[in-house]
Image 1 (tube, protein in one colour):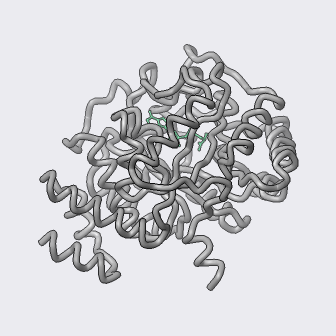
Image 2 (tube, protein in one colour; image 1 turned 180 degrees about the vertical axis):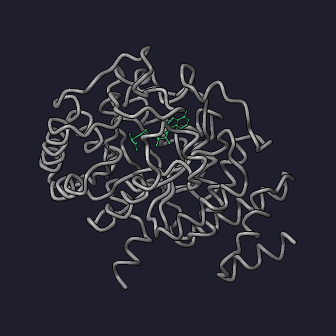
Image 3 (cartoon, protein in one colour; image 1 turned 90 degrees about the vertical axis):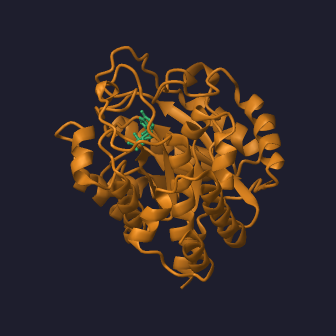
Length: 361
Ligand code: SAH
């Protein structure tokens, strides 16, 4: 049965939802290995043996949202709140530029006040300036008005990450307070696309109440929304959050293996999108991120934020590298990637092939 499906993958056949589920629920180690290898082969054929960097700058943990799973939710009073100063953000961006990272991601908790919106706009212009327009800029600042997305795009950002978190609206409701709205978030993905961004979304894996069918539907959702980039990772409990109390897990499987299977299936099903191997994977296993690359991912987001702030951007427990500085990461990462026989796309934007293919046709 597995052989038959894997043969179909090779011949460019679009898998059905049932076939996706069958692959997602594989249990035998040798079968899972075949699945991950099939995905890696597709990645190598379409993108080459190349990994692109996005230097991650976590500019602030101040947040107006109250997501039940997130360590920096508004109601978590045990968090030291910070906003990096302009010159600190620029310094981190410059570090990424000087080290030839090609692109950066600016991320923070959600804020939509004018002061914040203007601050980000100014930062984007300044980063473009300091890098002679060379550094690619991805934003991840949550849900915003259309005019704000447009303003930031005008300023020079060209990719945006907004995880839908789960494509099951009922599950979404269980994970968020009543005033957090699934349809609004979904609509933001459409607005972002219209504004011209390459759009990234993603989900958390093995959430309480989540089923295998939900995960299969997440993959179908990515396709239906014509998404360019995917960032998925395991849900990791964050103490001091309401969801930490919830033990109703419907999936009984190691989240690490499940996350690798999800990466592989997204690569197999969507083919030419960018897929991030996330830090949350590395939290679970020392070489988790490398394994993500071997399962079909092609993007890594090394942290270039000031070490000083890293421990305060604690979305979940046990986040790695919070005591390392960006310099440490450069050498450590390079050798990790060369070790798995992949190259680093230094100095390249590493845009989504899906986006390019779409705009070309
Ligand atoms: N405010 C921005 C960025 C949020 S943080 C936004 O709303 O898009 C980035 C991601 O961290 C979130 O989208 C979420 O998927 C992830 N995250 C938050 N808490 C987590 C947890 N406990 N385990 C794993 N991932 C988590």
